[in-house]
Every structure is written in structure tokens, then in C-alpha cells.
Length: 75
Image (cartoon, rainbow, N blue to C red; front, side):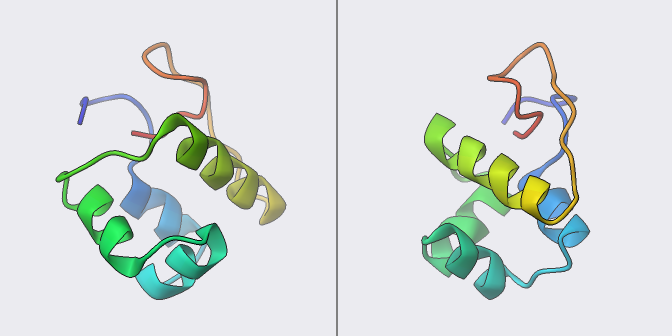
């Protein structure tokens, strides 16, 4: 994962006050996928990042745009 590219998945999940299980359920993915993202073993796809951004927005958590990615601010 790239450094200094915005919020990490763990940071976003924490801001949403969700467990890995709750976050995974809200996104329609497995807990192991969330775990792999948070531990740097894989990164969310562009579609997953967009879904996370929508989820965050629906909870009043807004993500700042960063130059390195698709505007979600997530890495």
C-alpha cells in the first residue's frame, strides 16, 4: 500500500465505529477480506473504494481527495 495517501481502511472503519464484521457486512464482503486490507496483504478495488466512500458518506464521514488515487482518499 502507498504511504501518505489518505485514510487507511482501519482508520475509516474506526471512524464509522464498526467492527470488522459489521464493516464487511455493510460492504457485502468477507471479514477475511477486510482483515487482508487492514494488514496490507491486499488493497480494495476501485469499486470497493467507491462503495466504502458511499458508506462513509451515509454515516456522515467524508473522505478527502488525494492525488494518488481515484479521489476516495482511501488506501
